[in-house]
Length: 208
Image 1 (cartoon, rainbow, N blue to C red):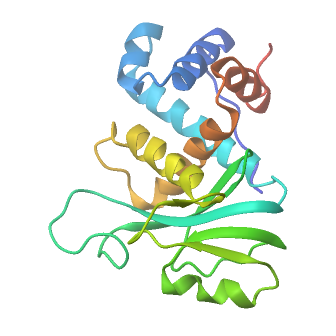
Image 2: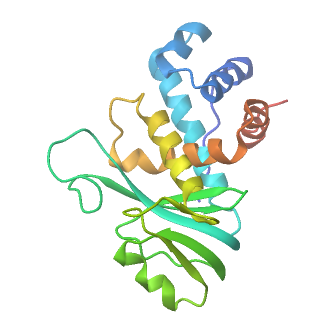
């Protein structure tokens, strides 16, 4: 992996931008509050997202009870929506019950999963999960959204939070979408702002 060039910004400025990033402050507002150029703040935010994406890529695979689902992201355009919608970014998500989530951009939903109890909706593309060596429970959304433990409320909560977070941006280039998704995954898994700041400070190799 190519070595990342160290930022030339003063450490104090980097730490303030990092805290604004975690707090969800737009780069433009953070630039004004910290006293740097808007492009400087935007580039530093991008660097933080790249760091997050690199770090969470090393996380261990899931096992246990897992919810799987896919969602579609993209601008508001007329025409077909949901599965098969043109111009959308397809994202496949896995959520371990009472645990963390992992999401990845995909061309289809044929992602392999460790030996687990898997909960999904009833989309036909998940049929391949039935022959992968683990028990697979389905939720038929045309009839109900939950059946005891048979539900995908957790992963759908992640989609809702992610779309709400990304809505603040006026479109995200497809080539950059993965780092924004990694950011949302990381935020969902950690939750606590104080922990997010502590972890990201360590990953960015800034003094505590």
